[in-house]
Image (cartoon, rainbow over all chains, first blue to last red; front, top):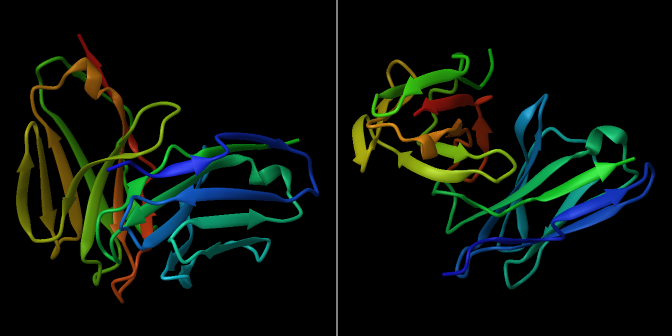
Amino acid sequence: KAGVTQTPRYLIKTRGQQVTLSCSPISGHRSVSWYQQTPGQGLQFLFEYFSETQRNKGNFPGRFSGRQFSNSRSEMNVSTLELGDSALYLCASSNNGGETQYFGPGTRLLVL
Amino acid sequence: QKEVEQNSGPLSVPEGAIASLNCTYSDRVSQSFFWYRQYSGKSPELIMSIYSNGDKEDGRFTAQLNKASQYVSLLIRDSQPSDSATYLCAVNIDWRGNNRLAFGKGNQVVVIP
């Protein structure tokens, strides 16, 4: 099976802009989770979607949002970008909750 | 108390030796535990998942889970230079069985040829 794919791989934005990241899960996987990784905070959970519904949300401000489509593909959006949003954004998919999550290659976002 | 803690600093081991990594977690209801390996500049890749108390072996890797003491460990036997990476302990902290992984800060392992 093909793995999790994420687009774009790299992104440079300026403060105040918004950005949309895309994730395609492993075929057949219905759960998609998003994580932010920074050198200071490590890997932090953003949210999880399952069957187009947000099942879980981490402790991030409302500027971070997401959605999932009927084919399980997911997008996350960050509005009004701040310098601190510079990070590696990782998407992970699994068949269901509690099961192994497989990570995509990530999108590296730089906010200037 | 942090949800998942990996307190050891960088670990240097000679090639062929055993590397031992430990992780503790705070939420007693956690049911799913994972070890991921992350090479510099890459995304995490799964090494092992473990759900029941005891040992689970996969090739040169052995994971140990002790729910009563709330710790998970990973042993890497016959360490190879290709094992040099950061190892992340992850715990699913969603008591409902949905997905919400909490990660430790990671342990950097350096295997010296």
